[in-house]
Length: 429
Image 1 (tube, helix red, strand yellow):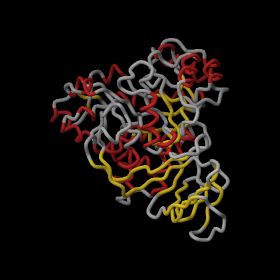
Image 2 (cartoon, helix red, strand yellow):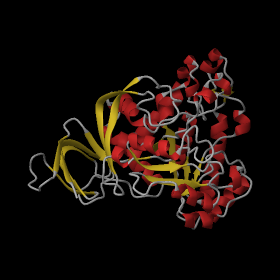
Image 3 (cartoon, helix red, strand yellow):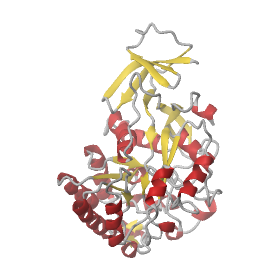
Image 4 (cartoon, one colour):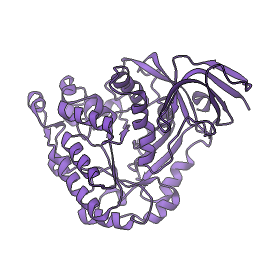
């Protein structure tokens, strides 16, 4: 077995609050030692000068969409997992909205059977809450838990309050996470932009803040009554951040996430009418965006989700209001967030990694990856200064629905490690 040493690498580890330059020895999928540069006397078969590079825990994706099975022309499992690995993710968590949906154990078994055994990535899935994601009839939870789902989520709005309370009561004795998206489709209507001045100027139909906050307030009341832990998905408004802050202050067992694109964009991003900014929920106004950023900084918002959703060129080549909501992001999130928040010194590197790795793991009820001696090598090597073009040659996704397509980005993943696979990420594929 090859024993490799990374020399002069900057080690980030939110779990132990470490940010320092060190030499790291790796062997057989395990971190053997972390020492001051040039101190170790342990032999190594390979040595690599990693000056200027970041070694940190693998990123953890809270929720993304798989179009396999159902719409493999958008994305198949091979391209989806390749995108995740290229983006520095070592855990990928799929929503159940495949076709057919993951509302039964056989669907999960079929998904798992398609994955290569030596994939340097843990692929897991949310089990559906309701049959066919229709919000009417609860699934057989015991079967899905036994099949290995990470938790339960429809990935859609669940409007039936009686059903929601029954869900929480049924799962009270289980340790499975529950992820819910607060959204009232009737209030949202055909809205594609958050209500406000920009919506009026652009002439696009508005989605009111109330479409999110009214459902969130009701959900928090149910959680207060049942005391069953819930993860709140796709937080997108300043008022929602306030409600979550108040709920946490009262001791409610909740966690929350926003998506990376809601941190990077706002209603003014839509002035280009780029259909790849058509998201659901829509990006917020500037005040919403700033509240989300501050929520990440303070920990009111626990985690950053990717919500990767591929669409073909033909599907997105329509008028803005007619475009399906969603964008790819697994390969893009880390470099763009690093350049926007870390390079500008608004966030520390540990803050970004906490919200992309450690906190998402905890939201899923899992032990976080960590860069510590004696622990499994579930890590990513990242070059924050390497430039690359987000084009057809470099993007692993089958689709290109991102506002950054064709642009030159700074920051690229060099290599990933996972205990299941001892080789370079590209070699594993």
